[in-house]
Amino acid sequence: MNYQLVLQFPAPSDDDFDAMISFENELIDHLGDAADVDGHDWGSGEFNIFIWTGHPEQTFAMVKALPVSQAFLAQMRVAYRAESSETFTVLYPPELAQFSIS
Image (cartoon, rainbow, N blue to C red):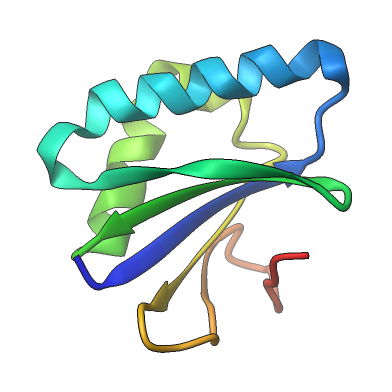
């Protein structure tokens, strides 16, 4: 798996943190052997979920197919980078011009 896919959201309040962790756990169950959910970070105004995959576009399609994802899509930003690169390619939303991790 040579790409890091990042799902990024505005940092949730303490009340929403549990919902984000629950979403991450759903991803682990749903993606199975297709990708490796590598954890999350929370801070600097954002919550990131990191996923290692050989096929970032296909993995994101799997993420979007999860019913629970629909509640998060309006806030979600998604991009990926090759393991050996710091440059991200934006997947979602399509009009997003730049992506970075704080």
